[in-house]
Length: 481
Image (cartoon, rainbow, N blue to C red; front, side, top):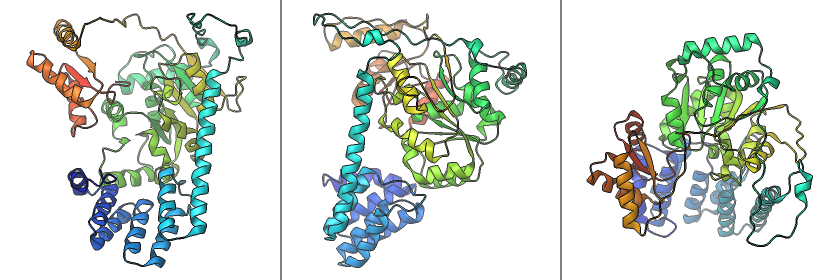
């Protein structure tokens, strides 16, 4: 809205975040004041953001613009150079920060630094292009484990390529678990989680993880993947960082932790206000948490990485690890930053978990997260626990309808006939709201959920408690729930 010059429309949502003293909102307020030519108010706003987040570059850029508006080129250049310079221990410039610096140096007529900033932008673009080409090349390359399939033969255009062979399942007997390890895990899961026994594959995953080995666990939905890092986090020293793709999923995980672990756990995400975020980072650095959930994009923030190192990170868990694969249906580019962050954190052991890993996705996970080469070699010891993900209680069905009215009729009939709770997915926020209202009008207890509602956590809680039977949602809800 600000970029489009729609200042009046941008003000209300920013005001709500200002009331929470959220740092980035202060810089947005500063930009509004600059657009309104209120230079003094803009300076106060940028200074407040800098006070809340001393390591952030955004207020430095803002203060540079303030000084430039006042005709103070020396001060403007000083702030611009501060923002552009990456000191030891600071995170690298993001592409948007590089462009901001270039544009600012252009205003200041600093030819040398314009060229320097543009060179960084060009280099980053080349790196990203090379990275995505590597992904595409790996996706198109024939499997070295089946060289005969590498020979291409001409086929009629109507002939479909055969499905790739499924990746091999693990022989659990080859993954060592001592009697003492299994006994300790069984006793602990009974004490803290109330389960009498471990499920198939859990002992192998947890024993290997506790020994400090890298582990890729491909377990079916409902097999207890979360326990595989929650119990070790409770039993072992140090901090376990869990990278999770959705706020709803983080909240669901934390809410369902046993009391002994919940008190030492936190989900750090964008729903927190500035004060809460600052306190969480301080507590993280002080070593007050054993289990920390965060989204992958937070790994690009140096203050967060610095706090993790000070807090003593001992294990990195990648939940929904298939998000790292360009072949996966939930590909998240931010997951590609994990490997670099892992190195910055001192290369702690990795536990990657997923229920969705066909052959190509699995190879992407192995390559991106564990550095496995095309011939299957890795410098690190990697244990793979892969079980059959087939779920006989799940099925996929389609119903052909003539138009949208027919689709609505089918939805109402289905929700009326089926017992229990369910999720209806819609493409847009408006669709979510309209479909939830439609179901309510037919006596079906429904609520909508999307990234634009203010009380997402409350809606999720109502659904998880069973207070509402149907939730109509965008893809902002549901992964891992």
